[in-house]
Image (cartoon, rainbow, N blue to C red; front, side, top):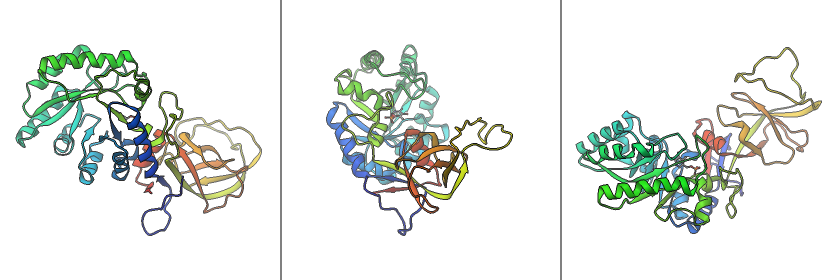
Length: 361
Ligand SMILES: *Cc1c(COP(=O)(O)O)cnc(C)c1O
């Protein structure tokens, strides 16, 4: 990736996430080209950054989705596009949802009632996608409880059921299949019959459903996929592998070396648990040159960082320090920076951390 110009005065600020918006746009375009349903770009991995959202839209994304209401509000300030709220709102957030989201995914009658009260008061209609749990056991109504929620929604003024949505993988690790997506389709047919109209949105899954979509194995009724990781990192959460044809180097995390010394690779003294309640294990490799980065577990999921420079190895981390072995990495001095490829959790946490700058080039 070309080095990304840093924001601000030209003074480098670390740690920093460098995001190549051209690569994001190209990844979005390649996915949009290869699947029939609309692709909604998911920005929760970059904390709802509107610059990244713009790149997704430039690549052909039909809209943007995020899990946090605060991110949806920020995106709405910057963008005119359709915005989908992925995580059901808390009671105090319903007002902002009605105001800023085109749709929200919902699974509780109580929340639908709160949304209804607000939208009727404002004389607007709030559109919802009913979330269906087809097996992952995170959010959504079970298929057998769908009719009850649908009836509740139909009775509420100011709330319109625009569609259904399903999500697997994030919690239970369930993989999308023709069968579990098919369960969604059965409910779509039931809902359309009851409502006497077609549903505008059948949201059939996330990056992990792209494999099915590329093979043409998604039911034709699916109108939308919500894709975050595939666009941002070019990887498939099911396999952890790169998705063929996508760029995997759009994003890097760069941190600064604040100490670099030769030290024994084994701790010395009586040992118990570390700051995070773990009992870390270390290999005895003798005395090694090790660098400490101004980066820690408060900033990032350190275990998900892949060093970009050959010979660098992440040894471990505490809240504010990351220790890397640089004995085989050539010259590394205090004040130098080291770059890493983040996995999805590392990216999402870094993007949300106030201590990490984000530079979009
Ligand atoms: C996070 C999330 C997505 C996007 O998942 P990716 O694996 O990043 O594509 C889609 N839908 C819901 C409900 C989510 O929570």
